[in-house]
Image (cartoon, rainbow over all chains, first blue to last red; front, side, top):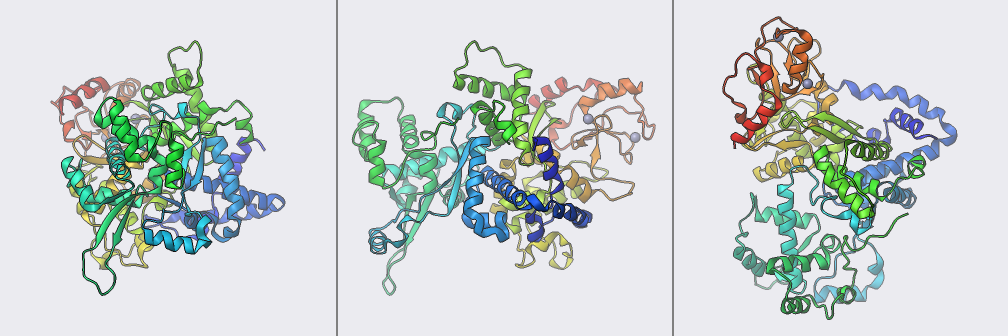
Length: 315
Length: 305
Ligand SMILES: [Zn+2]
Ligand SMILES: [Zn+2]
């Protein structure tokens, strides 16, 4: 099928399952267009022989579109969301459709979906509990991000902006701030108390506002987007005491910022690289020798390669 | 897709596709450093300065790839900067479905109220602003009076009562709309539809805000280029629907030979504006609308800062 034919065909079949299954969230009052698709229903049935293949192709396309639009707005891509919004009744075909969509994302867009690792077990208590119930050890988090798989030369800032939008000031601020917070947590061994974080932020004059936004709101956004994990420990039932809040590194930060992002940030803050700083930096991050991403990886128990470092070469 | 992949589609094309999608829209000037960086990444020898033709090549490959997924690259002139823009547009032009991927139901109904404000409240025959400040947006943070809500506009939220948005949520939604490439924020704080937003929402805006057969239409078009107009010049007769982009004026009047409105025959002096920015106030120019060309205008924008 030539691409023009294909295009025409897909146009005609605009009444995709998404439209039919979900109650339309139309924003307009009088909706003259809503029934107009009904007539094209018939020619779809005439396609009988290739109907399944066609339907499958449509689902793959829809999944690609869904992944792109989620990523575009930094909405987490969730397995449940894919099932609900893309697959509908075809939930069982998740694996097949996912694999086909993945291939198209790689070949056409130079990107791929990566499943984020499960959140680390945060406390000792949780770690023990997890060890005793080894059952779910291998389960993925069910949350995906769309990452570029192009070689790193093709991912320089002049090609891929830090932002998703033309007016990127706010977004650049957000990225700078979240990298900073993640760095603080990382440099503190992966866990930072709320008080300490606040102290750092106060020193940076960012405890109330980040640019024009409230700090609290930005932190919340970081949490929602999986850059950080906020953990609230309540005292055991029946005991008095304060809630304790700690901040941890979120899975997305590991993928997008990564160890080299943290090191880059720190070098940036402290100025030119000095041997002494490098040493301290490595010590804080638990890296023993240079180029020791792998060591850190072992210690963290999961890959710490950043998106920038991990490009698989295509073609 | 097979055709695409078998015809030399490479990482440079993929990178360009990512670049234009991430930005939502590009001008030639913005595209040059991207293409240079791609060439550098490819290790291309004997590079020359990026030309319009090079840009065109990357655009057409990106467009080919995007069209498989019902996206398109469309071009338009930015009404304020007057630059030619190439926008990455979703051609499955059902904004609700698109927005529903990324916004919650109560945010969606806020967005509808926001668009109503932009295209109804602040778009009267006397005052065509078609933009809104954050302060004004706060006024529609909550749905009006619940009893008045009979629109199916709010059906999406009928399962749970729509309590509207908090002020902080309004701020967040506005900035997400800017991030998503739907809105632009002007230097003096007006939010209006971006060129890409206008391209994508055109059918929906007409369907939603223009009454069939009514004398007055809220959504208007440039008489010359027929594109949707939200910034530009209007006829001196307040009830006339003639609108004209500043950058379309010169040609238009040359063809028409004389500056009389072709719709109502009122003399057209190019001093009445459809616009949002306070900065568009300008010293009254003589009766020559054509003088207020793109260049002059750009200068004035600078001065206004
Ligand atoms: Zn025009
Ligand atoms: Zn007129």
